[in-house]
Image 1 (spheres, rainbow, N blue to C red):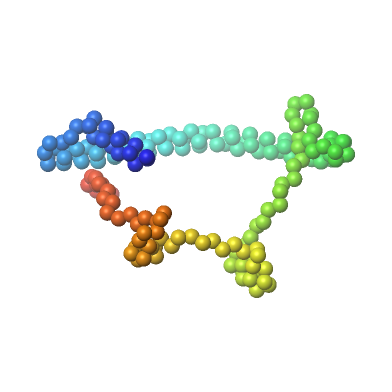
Image 2: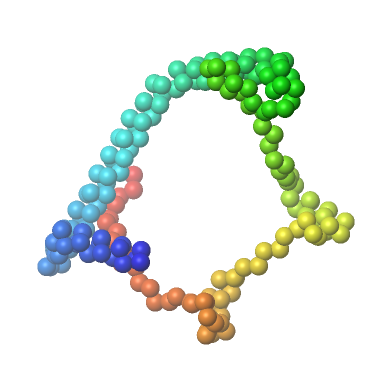
Length: 175
């Protein structure tokens, strides 16, 4: 479905630009494609320059505000931790409404962090703890492409060949 949408866009764009009628017209259109591409990149660079200037102008204020907010949050947390028993009614609730906002204590679910992956896998195998290892089975596409005759007729497996892409490469000089 996506391919037909893409094709229809290309066809309608080609009709809007007009179909060249000679080799010279094709060469002129390719030159124009290069011109438009370079103009696009210049404008993108100008846009990014403006974004960088805006970011540089606001960054110091944003950093100062963020630092102030973090300091205030730390103060609120310190006070709330000191008064947690009262705020949570002896631990019966996990949050407290303080009129202008709410504070909450939420315990994260357990997680697993792995450092030195190869060493951990080796250790688990050595200790007979293979139940903590996962083996993933997937299609080896490189092997299929190397021997497409061997998989002929397998439902759901198709080797796609003969697709031709049309590419226009305007000449550019590298600086």
